[in-house]
Amino acid sequence: MSLREEALGIVSELDLLGTLGRHGRAELVGSVALDLIVKLDIDVHLLVEGRDLYSVVNQIYPELLRHPKVDEVRITDYKDGSVKIGVDGYPSASGVWSIDLYITNQPEKTAFSYVNELRERLDEETRGAIMGIKRHYYGRGLLRDGLSHRIYEAVIRRGARTVADFQKLSP
Image (cartoon, rainbow, N blue to C red; front, top):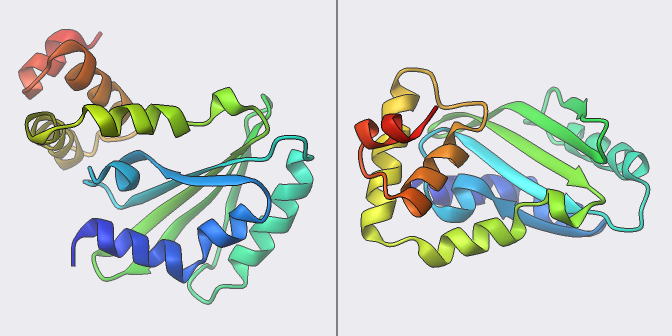
């Protein structure tokens, strides 16, 4: 089973898109949506236009906690109209996954259109370059804090194909 199939199985097991979809527009974003998985993490964005953000969060996290494989959730309020609900340890066949549900009432804070744009621009060469660079940083414990996004940008928009190219382009 591929990592993407495993991730989609987890999304289904938790009924994430169904649960979140009852509150607004929910979509997979990030490496699972793009099939560029190196690190075991799942990102879902939820747009809740016209709804109280905190009331939605207070409905979602107890549903997650009712699942037998979810022992703990972490809630981060960014104080900018967005909140993240994180599940840091979801066990599965390949290891322990982290799941981040990013909830906002501001369309511009979602990655919906960004993921669609990347999906259209990815080809075999750019996929290979992204995966190689991501694996390099993941192997060193450095694939975090938005590094994947910077890698996508360097490969897709600035022509990086190797770790050395990426390093030259990154501050």
